[in-house]
Length: 270
Image 1 (cartoon, rainbow, N blue to C red):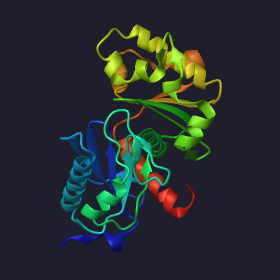
Image 2 (image 1 turned 180 degrees about the vertical axis):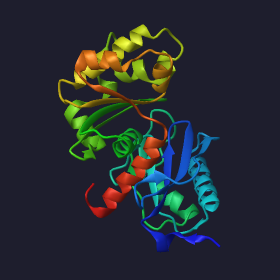
Image 3 (image 1 turned 45 degrees about the vertical axis):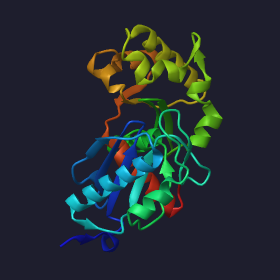
């Protein structure tokens, strides 16, 4: 017999993290400390169509809920790549992938939802998740994927996308040696060439950000994980350059973080 999610709220959530090319869904338990409480389902998007992507997300949500023994309506945390609409219910622009202005409405017609979720930045969600997993007072994060995501955390919460862009500007608007920071540091650029120039671009962008913010931690996620594995970046170098602690953001961080952001939004504490 399935567990009634409505009776157990707010202990049980479904976390959805969708990038430009793939989607991940996992069950999250928040009682007694937030954690994943089941396997993460991962699929590549099988279509570039917005409606098809929402349908695929809905199917994956149903699959994960069924495996966990949860019955609808579901409460979900939702991270989705792209620029969100002013109401947070869809995307109005996407550098890689389709814009889906009615994303949440479409999702709600396919999956019974207990609340109407808002979309959260995948980079911000990843940094919020890291704050659950690790101890730090402030952190600046860069996430390399099909695009480049940024986030900042201090005083117990992360900045919104609008706060971030107002205070430090967009990486895509800042140039280093003739190319914008996103063009340098998204995975499609550096994964096919020698790393030195891209390392220099990373250092230059971080230097620029440190003119505005003073974090305790530099957090790198997404495809930057390969930099750790290949020895292209080291904690000692980051400590020597800026006195910052280096942290690798693992894939599950955004799943925890999107739930944390949605819980905070519902409670009215952002």
